[in-house]
Image (cartoon, rainbow over all chains, first blue to last red; front, side, top):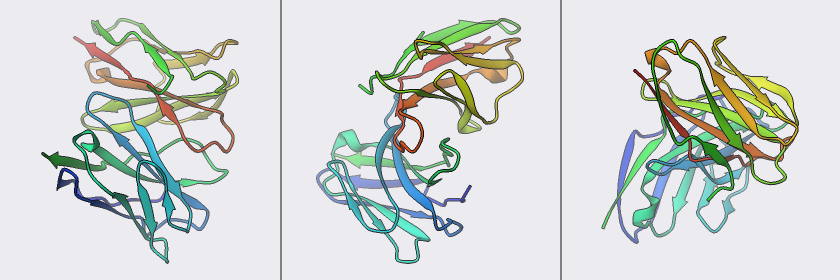
Length: 111
Length: 113
């Protein structure tokens, strides 16, 4: 499993964009990059995933570096509900289906 | 609401006891995953079942076992409980195979005293 490095914590103001970085320098060529988040007192929640190209969905955008050794989750306008721990998870296509969670980044959103 | 249900929500028991945690996956999902979240170990994968069969095993202790029934609900059995087994236990489900997104339940908080 590829190792990931994320900041322990980040802070943002409400309605401002947030860029959450993740380093995954040992990622293999077939690993997708998944992001999950865990709101307080809840189970993890899928956010987005991608392989090489940048991806957008209703929750967030995912920007993947050209060498795939890092990625950035972008929340375009943070809300108080986005306060959570965000996990970046490289996940091999066709390999084990388990998710390997690191320590993640705790995002605080200030009103 | 992810559509995955877990019962009970909270469980308090004594060391040496045995408990059963239950998970009902989303309608149509064949795969069930169990994860443990503790303060010192973080979120760790325990075991996966797919359509009634064990598919993958992670850091699951021998005192722990699981099964998936024909109606696809799953149970995680924890026996000879120790203080260190106190944790949140999450169940997740998806279609299995190459389905990437896992849907997590609200968890069961187990406290061993």
